[in-house]
Image 1 (cartoon, rainbow, N blue to C red):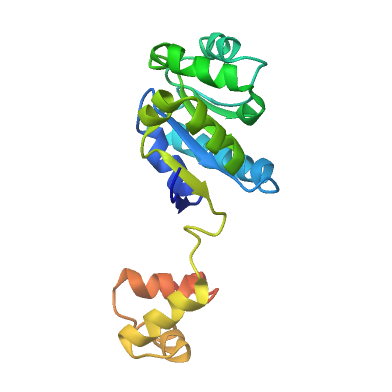
Image 2: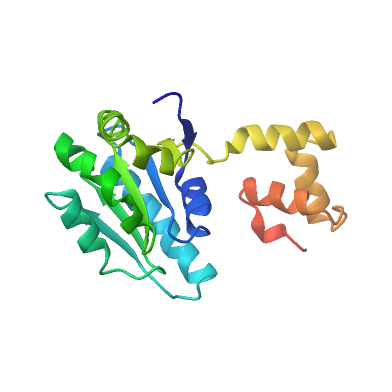
Length: 199
């Protein structure tokens, strides 16, 4: 299966929401799957509201007993919808093989995120090689920390770049002599002094 790029909820949602009919696979550590899907759903809910003006919805769905039942149930959703599908790792090898034969039926319909474990992804790639190649590079590993800014590192990069201390920036803001630069507004917010922005 190879190396998978790590991605956080925002990156997964951004890459996914703009592609109609897309299917992606996200590999989770078993202990992160439930919480990770909730975070991805929250991101997607916001994106659909913004990008699709409220059209479509995000549905969390447990895989039915067989792949043919799965494709039938997916037919109930519109192409504006997003389905977060879990449980495919419980499919028998025959059902995974059947996905290869039914993959053309998957082209029209909702966007589908297959949330699975490493073992589930390995079984899917081994038993549904054509389906897997169709998914292609749209397979990633969930990393909850990916895309989350390290506040202290960002503050240090601002200090280094502008050659100023936090105290100096606060003093400039309080005396209304802070340069008109968005980086300084970010700096104040990171320091918990968003009240000084624009003063």
